[in-house]
Image (cartoon, rainbow, N blue to C red):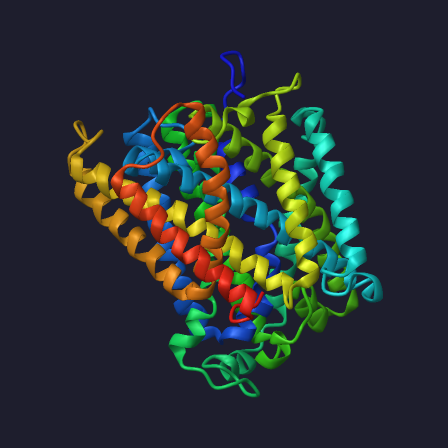
Length: 478
């Protein structure tokens, strides 16, 4: 969507892209999710692990932006450059699919938030009425975006305020009502909660930490619009540091205001429920209104990212060329149509889910892990080969260490997700390969797989069949 005459993004605009992508739905649900999983001690360990891992990943994005400035749309382009066409496709498809699932989660959160006002209609966000409202919203946004991004940009300023102000108000309230005795009681787990080992407690927080860090690559997605390539890395680090501070505060401070069992039992969005306990009903209403505006804005941003990723993958011939087409308003219309059809189907499927809210959150996190793992792996390859380090050889060992830590972190996150969710991810990858990848390869008259890629597809196919069998037999539930 770029042109030579198009305005370029400054480091400030790119940082706003990262912050806007990261501060969405997840941060409003941290108190309840952490309260269910662990106490402050486990939360501190969880954030230390997640923060370190994601910081290393941010440094990989920064290094690759500087050392491989020839590669745009880095999230999947790095995977293709390092590991071949099929892994590039899986990275692009996984990132796009994860963005779609994230958009589904946004609508479930909107429904559950409205459920706080109209419980008999919206419930936890997956009732028939909630689904109908979500579908109407999806397609209203769809046709607004088709008319051109400029038609919707006025929302961004409102959304930024709606995201930050409620969070800052909540943090100030939690600081004002901070109770050291309560914090101490909750520190190692609190009372009235099931006994779990510290390892189990930390593991139960891992997917939510991945979810709230999604968007760290926001500047990389739009790297070709940057005024300077170095601004991409700078924006990634600035956005990461600022948002991490907000998330840690929103997680830890509520432990000083109420028993952990109370915190774990509040309804979604849990930040609203916790603030209501602290300051009264007005706090919940204030947060919920902020959530609705914030999530709608985040949905707009991620709809654009979904279409941009699918369109960019089509332009690089990793997806069928149909999805590279632009309409008269310079919007990748076909990519947007496929995105919103898929989002609509997943929204309908939430009606049959036991816990649509947390299931969509966890699956969004899992789908992001493969693209992140491949980016980290490519960071290892670039540093080992010394590509781009001709004038800065001293940085090579440092970047290699950062990349290896990022690789280990993403692998640990896969293990924390559990076998069931990995199999469900394979269930989605198999038809994606059979339809989109095969289609793209036929268009190019290119062979489907190298011998190594054929093995990877075989493993994916077996895992997908196992996941489908588990769903049919009830061994895997959603």
